[in-house]
Amino acid sequence: MVARVSAGCPPEVIVRGYGTLAELMEISCDAWVVGPGLGPLGEAETAALLRLLERGKIPCVVDADALNAVARAEAVARLPVGHVITPHPGEFRRLAPDLDGSTRESAARVFADRTSPVLLLKGARTLVTAAGQPLWCNATGTPGMACGGQGDVLSGVIGALLAAGSPSLEAAARGAWLCGRASEIALSSRMLSEESLLPQDTLAHLGAAFLDWREQGR
Image 1 (tube, rainbow, N blue to C red):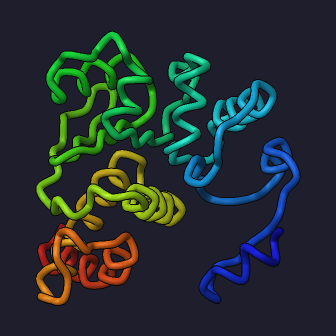
Image 2 (cartoon, helix red, strand yellow):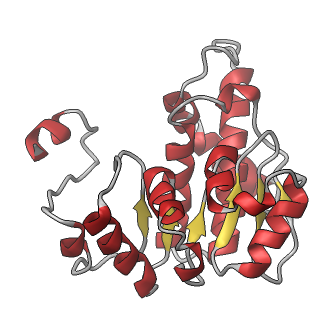
């Protein structure tokens, strides 16, 4: 299995195989990204995932199927400070069904004030906030980002920023800006359209987005 996965990865990606989520608790690392490609979890796997997330010693980006597992277990309150959750609107409704019908801004503020992780709520204008913090609205991005896999790129960028030592709120806000800006740069090449934009196009233009970030003195 590891060999098959490795064969499909670029050479800079290191792939290691682990039998259970419990084994991951013994790994020494600077940040986690959990959820993309995880797949549905059973009760035992969900319990192991929650134990991993609850430890809170390592900042973690919780996305995709990991968010769905947290929602099914009604365990979002168990996630500690330092983690970043990155739901799209459907995942957010599962995490906070009582806030369905509220405006995005209001729902994000209420949710953040009653939970510990940083919230990055995806949408036409991604929102980032945390308990006791202002609500930050990302101004970059294109409609072409509304396709599968763009969220995985975002989670990876946030995870990389966490691993480099950025605080969780800063990593989430900066990651959203960078990915949105990368998609804008990709489309400005006139070689792509909103309809054809793929996650790999956003990824390919992240370097230019980082340069823009620095040039703007952010």
